[in-house]
Length: 103
Image 1: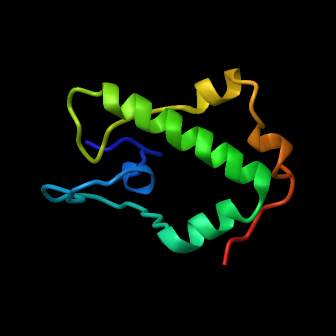
Image 2: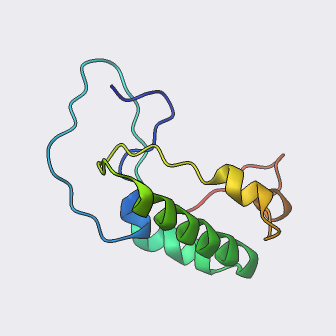
């Protein structure tokens, strides 16, 4: 089962990945999909966000390499490590009170 707020196939953003199998929904669900090129154009357009994205990707892939059971549902969480690091924090880059629209 996929838990609420799960990220499905996030690793496709950070490394070369091959999907094997199908994911089937047996109830009501909501899927959010990212287009890779606009995502990276947005992340790369602001130096602080770019640095955060690079650090996130490096940390994510390092943790992915430690996984023994690799699949599209790997529950890798790097947020705690990012919060503990001395690198730029997302909260210092994106205002929390105003939503940001990516077109």
